[in-house]
Length: 278
Image (cartoon, rainbow, N blue to C red; front, side, top):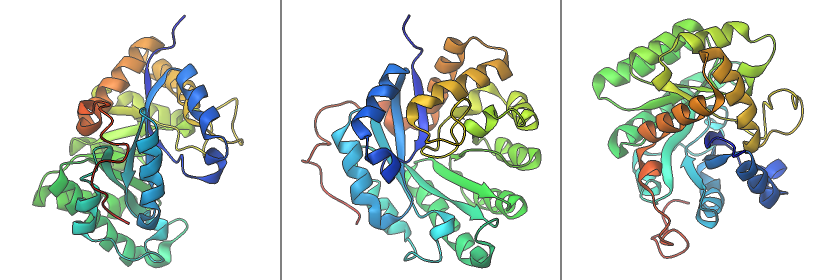
């Protein structure tokens, strides 16, 4: 029986835990039915390495930005720099960016400045914004709403595990919620209810690997192939068959990540395109 086609909308293939066995990781993902994945650059100085992974592997796309927990330590990104990086044919999203007041509340002001820069880059490029939010629901909802009023952009709340209020605020703006392995944890019933109450056409699935492995791998290294385990739980939450949920979330991915949906493997991404970003 063929596994239903899935997309891992957020992973970190450049992290050592996955790079040490990248051929095996990609092989197991394909065996699990994962036909595409987006690997995320969290510091712009590592963009060339992340880009190289996408160039070398047809199923892999990438996004780039400065993670909020690194915002105070890394050079501040500019809209123009993000626009240049976005010229690459397999660069399909802006981020991850956002706010994290759990671990790095002391850099809140810098995080907010960085977030607004990334939003403007998403607005100008037409690429979806990829948001990390932790312990910052009020500021996150306020900034996303203020900026959307100033000019529309698209967005996914990656690894969504925040409050129902932030979820509703994001959905009201037309944004997407992405389900990670957290939603599959036994004690995440309230989170599953938030997803189940959301419009089906706004749900994505992801691993955030190498972190947050779903059961039965919880506490161990996560990898893109495990998105199938989270999708199984997602299907149950929505009262759908697994294949139906896989098709739904893949279609949702294509609707949001339009550049990835339109990409064809012509070989142009393997060394002949102009190099941008650093």
